[in-house]
Image (cartoon, rainbow, N blue to C red; front, side, top):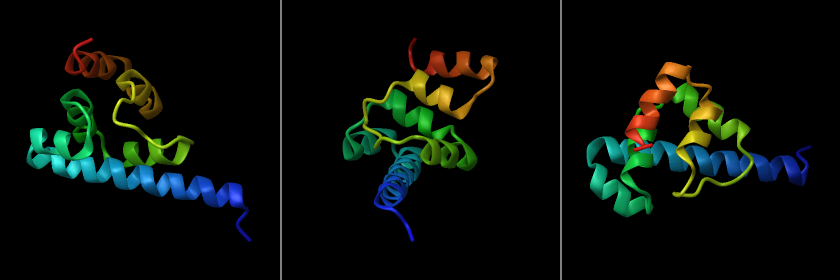
Length: 96
């Protein structure tokens, strides 16, 4: 039997996964339109397009809060455990 806490986390994971995959697909087609549709900025949308499916799944399975468009890109990079040299590249994309 699923407890309400476990069920709640599963629901958040599903929402996060839907959000990330939908944003990634939309942004890979039209970055500006995706940003308008999902209420996010170009840095975040571009960052999401460069994540692999396994990185997105890892983020969604470990994060216990619903992603918001204003998520800190450095936090997202830390969750994906991107190697240091790649983190610098993502920071450059983010304008840091």
